[in-house]
Image 1 (tube, one colour):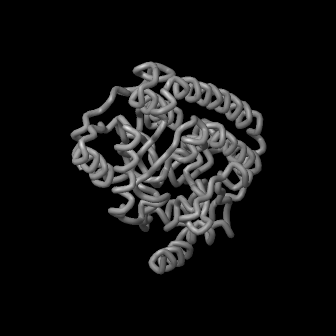
Image 2 (cartoon, rainbow, N blue to C red):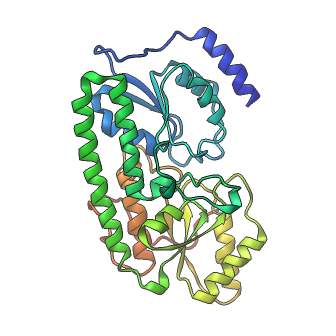
Image 3 (cartoon, rainbow, N blue to C red):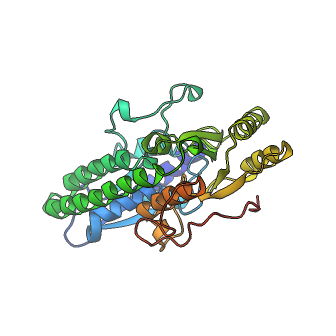
Length: 327
């Protein structure tokens, strides 16, 4: 963080002040930290926003360290949106400092206490992976709308109409998730992944969730945790476990090997999107596509029924992946 403070001071002296209100002559310059946040801003803001996203596909926000260019982008932006709940842990201090001079908005700030999960293992820190519960994430759209309206009240009607349409799509996605997950046999509703990013997903869609690592990936998976998961898989005859696009696969592969050494064959059901969306320019590179992929592949891999190409028949692939994925 010391280097951030130095960069922040240097850039602040060399950067012109950003707008405090919108101009009709050009879009609102927005910086968003992760893809899930950027997607909301793009959907609500439409042509009135130009969104720069700091963290792209496959990037783990728990471990992300911003660059000098990131500092410059944040300082020159009109508005900054981030998830909050310590997801962007290594950027949090800088964002708090910048918030003294411009709108810097944590989109999870208005979530009710009841809707936010906490883990004893994190010493009271909240679980930041709210986007895994589609309805909970949909409520964060309201924060984006109100922030854009405050900055650019002239386009209030456009922002509110776009938000309403987007939230209708999210409600449809949530219904799809509940429907396909209800087809998974009760004994098979167990989701085991690389790290604890899926507890909101499990709460919303009726799955028991286990992760090899904790809420943050900033730690190595312990042998004790791996052995515990192997016990669970063997005792409960779990058919599939899942890797994640933004987390190394070695820990989940160790679980698969451990189960195999005890005579139980478990497959890699597929690669899920956890802390980052899919490739830019693809359906999976949107929030709706990301969750459609996760819901579809989990339901199908755990023995449920779901369309092979998802809710909107737009997934690139949702078939069960090979168990021999490279680490």
